[in-house]
Amino acid sequence: MAADHTLAHSVAQGAASSGTASEAPPAVLRLYTWKRPTISFGRNEPVLGVYSPDSEHLRNIDLVRRPTGGRAVLHDAELTYAVAVPSRALGGARETYRFLNHALLNAVRSLGTMADIHGDPTERALPLSAGPCFQSPAEGEVTANGRKLIGSAQARMGGALLQHGSIMISGDQTLLSKIGLSTSHHQPATLSEQIGAVDVERVANAVISSMKRFFGGTWLEGEYSAEEKRMLKELVESQYSTDQWTWRR
Image 1: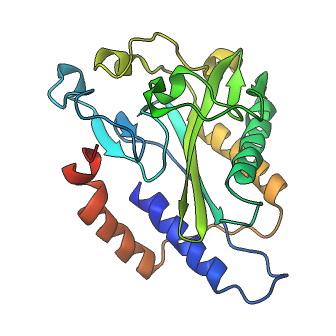
Image 2: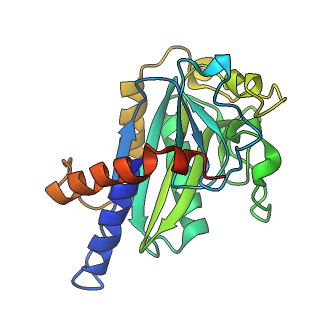
């Protein structure tokens, strides 16, 4: 979470210092997996009184709170994507959301899924009380057979928009119903049920290829700068590893 936050900050700074109107604005794509099963809470999602840190189901589960909104997600058998773009580069928050979700749709379709974009563009976002993220799809999200395949969350961070989310490869979200966050048994769609066994590298390559096609421009693999490493470490220590942040609501 601190890394995604840091990259969004860097994109905002890069956009602010762009030389000319014709110069392509900077953007970042980051793809990653999780070493341990982890539950992430949305930035403003209430968890106090809803969830107990002493639950026996959480002995081998990590907990984090995202810088973005939305509802609880169990990160496990998935590929997580993060994209940071200048806040007006694609027209604004809703336009960016639609653009990225169509790029993700193209990626999973290229793998052989029968995925689609859910809902009516006039639909309102689901409230935080609607239960965990994958319990029900919101307008604009990628679904398969009526169930959410990719869950996404977004936040404006200075002059940048950060959007990140989970591309479900296998597994489910059952644990969330065991710890009191949901009584629903609705489960996400997965790539494995759509197309059979698929490794994370193949999924990552499909996402990269689709993002390149949709964004165009020049793409380079990069490392964190010294300033980004400093900021990332500071954010971990001061925010993302603290109970004050995780249990803020």
